[in-house]
Image (cartoon, rainbow, N blue to C red; front, side, top):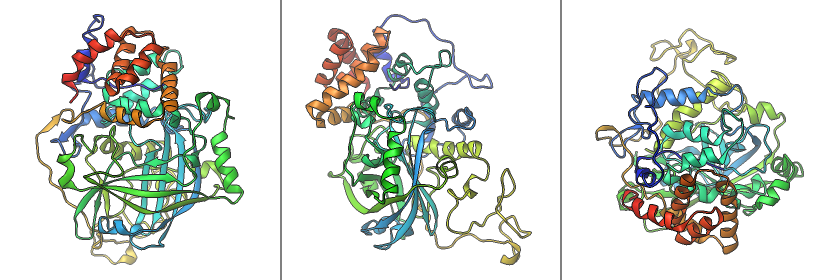
Length: 517
């Protein structure tokens, strides 16, 4: 049911198929040619994405404005109020964020669960990743921890996000979601193999929102009081236990089964809770890994030679919102909403989301979306932002600029001297180039081999249900080859299900191997 992006390394696969007419060159909306639509411009291998990448910014900004007023992605959602309580403050040695500082510290939260691809009016049982977004109302401002139930994603560069979503959404001609479209896309994106393998298990159809784990997906940079930094991925483990549905069970569930299950529990006085852990990676261990840790298609192990896992605390949801629209629909999350002690990592998908998510909310909800009750911080806001639609800030004073020598009574404000701002080296040539450590199949194979035999059979059945609808022999062969390269038995069983000859798969795999590492 999902689709993958075109990557130059798949050329060796495609050359084995039938000859195709050369498509016309892609252009920007201005008509200017696009020289590389696969990679954002970064400051070298490890640096951030550069704002000068006009093609990326225009592509994301244009994409963010495709729907009025429904979210382009994560449109079907359910929200709940609760609290987060610190049970172990060992992470305080890595992050100066105040919400982690004291055992017993409580922070109010609002959580929105969602499906990713399907529209606002869709059944909740459709196969999809589930969004898992938490807004912490801390005493240093809000922190949005925006993730999914699954620990990885389909793509590693934000420049491909509009293409991926377009392939997964209904056809602009037939208005129907079509496996021929999204597998055509994913056949060019070998690194999607890991996410496709996860989402086509029964994890793609959870029994309810309270019965799934959550993941930050991206790494974040943590800064301690000394200005020292490490990287972390955050993982929520459901205290209710992971429960999933088979494809047949999910199809039979009521339209709003997941929302009803969560709201019935909360209204009955039950709490839904999760334990939060952080997986820590120190900078000196990055080069020791056989994968790029800032690649969103890769998971981090809970335990390992180069990783440390710290339990942080417990989140409890305990209240259904009084007004669904004012809370769940108007709630707006962005991975750029951070607090001191937490900063972005060089993850290329995250770097694009830092712009895209907030830009989406400004368009969808309005310029002053962060002033709405569900989004407003529990601390006072002091800056020179003004006017715009729906402005009800109540701001007073003549000084709407900074710095100023006028007194605070006139509205003046100053830089904060308390927050620690971490630094990091940036070097290299500004470039459009893929990451060097791709390894698109290894973790997919590891995940497959951790499944029980029954779970493997369900995965192959679910995957074949969509891949078997693909009319192109070439696309089916390439997709089976990806899964075969993750695990040979995985590929062979899928090949039988979707009528692909193994001789074709083995030939493609042999041609493809030199290009994947």
